[in-house]
Image 1: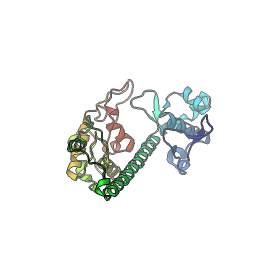
Image 2: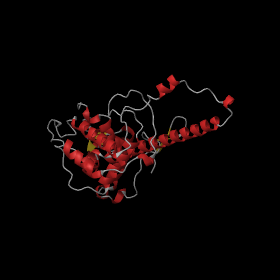
Image 3: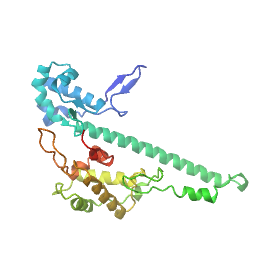
Image 4: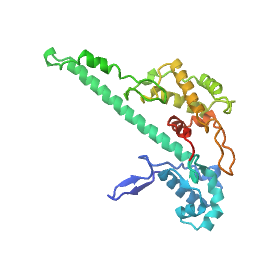
Length: 295
């Protein structure tokens, strides 16, 4: 379901950061966590999902949550044990809770928007090339002067450096056709993960959703036009990219199980390969989110 509200001009505006809002599956009442909720708890849970979507997280204290739900603290306390398992603590924002399902929807929506933007750019490039070809068919006197060799040489330097997570020399968008993306070498990437991230949990089984996550991330990074990430068009270059990605992960205390626990709390679980490949987590790793010191 799409959640919308009116803005000051009277137009519909979607709640949240993306244009389509978030989706609540029709199977929500029958899922294990929610099927055991009372009607009051389920209603509060949906309300909290709306706040978590719009704000990114919700407060982790009963009085504040009760105000968000329109309940008294005592009434909220009585049903909170039914709702709490659906949220997890924000690693870097103590006192806040996040909803992993909504975080994944947000990342997927952003990726879809980026893909549509890239498709538009490719279409514009194709139309530009067709227009250029048509101009070249005109009589020579009507064709505009070609760029000087020096200008052509300058343009030739607009290839991305491919320096993973480094500063790019020039920010240039280069679209890669889908047929230039090699098949995902699943076993080889898992082996590199074992070799580089030796303190992280080892992979014992690999298939189903895990394969889908890795295949999706492989294609995304192969086709990326971001100059800092580089992309790749061969299996060899792709395996080198993923080795550098895992080396990037080893520089994070949280991603390698070395993060200090919160005062009075237990140690953080060391992330698995499957966890790092989830859309939201993968994007945050690339952006260096887990490399910052927790405040």
